[in-house]
Image (cartoon, rainbow, N blue to C red; front, side):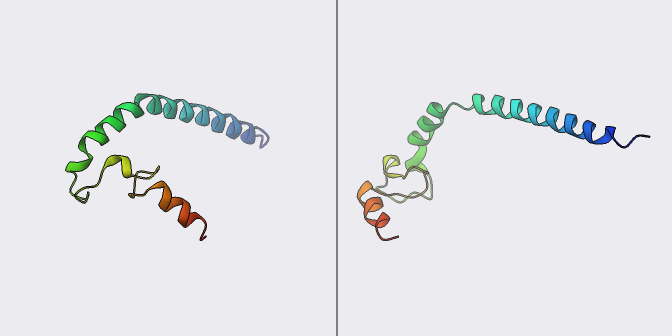
Length: 80
């Protein structure tokens, strides 16, 4: 058995696996429509048990995790 062929097979296998994984990930990403997701979140946000009364979906930060306003973000950015 020649040892020189094993690394080539490993490289080919890794390449094929990476391409297959990339295509699968692309297919999953295209199946998720961000506009539909946001519409669902916007419509159901207030009814979630973890939302404090009076909070609105529009008050969430860009990561969708904590209520914030642009003035709060700009004032805290200078204190870092």
